[in-house]
Image (cartoon, rainbow, N blue to C red; front, side, top):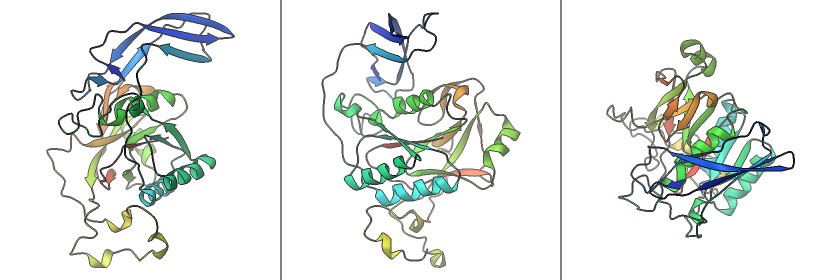
Length: 300
């Protein structure tokens, strides 16, 4: 993330076969910055012909002074339920961009990391910048949008560009649920393999336990979960009516990372072949809305 109004000269340090190559870097700041002074950015480094595959890359610029911290994330039950659901759906790996969390949540992340299912990326921009904990500067000013969410999404895109065939980009309280057993083969057949797939958002508020007219749908009591911190997503079956005016604004995506250059919170900013909407009868996103410290999630 870079200050949009700050002029900085960047130096690229590339290590290749015990040789250090130093060159000037140049920046590109994404236009999707929501009006914040800082925005997600790419710093491009020219790679010399003798150094096609650098072992290490460092970029130097003016240092930032450490600043404040954020609230602790402690939604252990909801986190665990979503992670287990991802396993059922066939996800190979979950990449968590973590601002911070409680000790009990960290223990759970450690367990999943040991099994190879979770990759944890510490996302501590709040130690260096006064990041906002909201999506709009009017609600919480800061200098960067929502804990640096957009830089995290782009970091994940490039980090796994040649490691994953598909990457799903959404938050920990969201789930893209297929209504077909083999979702991705179906989408490949209908739209092609080099697309970005967009999924409609469906909100299930966590302050409404059950719809009054459907008491028979209540899941059986889970006594062993009562002492676990967090929301039981199986109890929140009431869906807010779909706001047709917001369908095109609030959605999340699954992408072929090699077909995308820059991405944002809802959709991509630049890609090779654009995006397509997935019909809600095939798959849709389920959002058990929970407002708290951002805990980014990307699935491979």
